[in-house]
Length: 346
Ligand SMILES: Nc1ncnc2c1ncn2[C@@H]1O[C@H](COP(=O)(O)OP(=O)(O)OP(=O)(O)O)[C@@H](O)[C@H]1O
Ligand SMILES: [Mg+2]
Image (cartoon, rainbow, N blue to C red; front, side):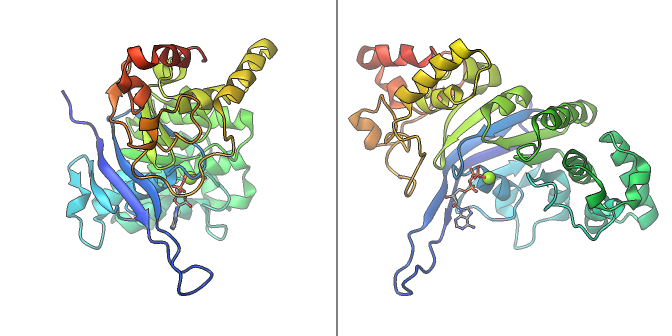
């Protein structure tokens, strides 16, 4: 079997708390990511989904080596990032690129589009300006714009077009992996689907893999081959996109699914009812991520004592994924009713 392109092993990231309002009192450390494991194959899209503050961007930033992990290892192709010194090798920076949510803020307004797209090549390659412009022109056409747009400024483009420019820039170095951090969240719905279609076409053409980060499970399902669901610093469920969305194993995944609006009023009523049953504390995760319990236990309608005492090991789901949930460890004899209720909402 081929090795995955990306392997993230037992990754944890803690941000030091720093000084509080009273200088002699330190704020508590923030456990942004705890013991996260996942892989991404070449040419595959892994969707990383979870509510605000769950740790998705932090994982992306570590893969991009913008920050270093507290513990854990990342392997991308032949690179083992634990072996990197203070400066990340250029070849690694070429191999993994990023597209951010905000197509306005992420493009320098005072630079021409050609220079924006050519910037990674100027930094990471020995191409001269003429060669960079030629490549930028090709990339613009590849993302559905025109090569003469090189000589324009970002403000001359719509939000969707600017995101296309950001994607062209990210592809300039022929990366193996793109980290797409909420790349369509700031766009209107019809532009969202155009950009998603573009990303799918570009993946077919180039073989690039995507880590697609978003809080909207409906969008993530559409583009992803597999999905990893995060809650308050932990991955709690992984599986194929269809299995996770049709046969969720974790109560939090079920809550996320029940939160997707349904155009059918009857189904929408059922979903709202289900959401009320599931969402004890709809406000979301609060406080520090717990170390020795399931972070969803506070909100979970099925929570047992053990859920407040330890974070469960991952176990295979019936659908072929993996879930970290005591309901699935404790077995049907204890929670058969609860487990079967978990697969009813889709
Ligand atoms: N540089 C930092 N210093 C301190 N805490 C941080 C830092 N960056 C992120 N955090 C905290 O880490 C946690 C995870 O943040 P992160 O941005 O990764 O979440 P997210 O899942 O991307 O959320 P969103 O959907 O809002 O983008 C949050 O509690 C956040 O406040
Ligand atoms: Mg984020």
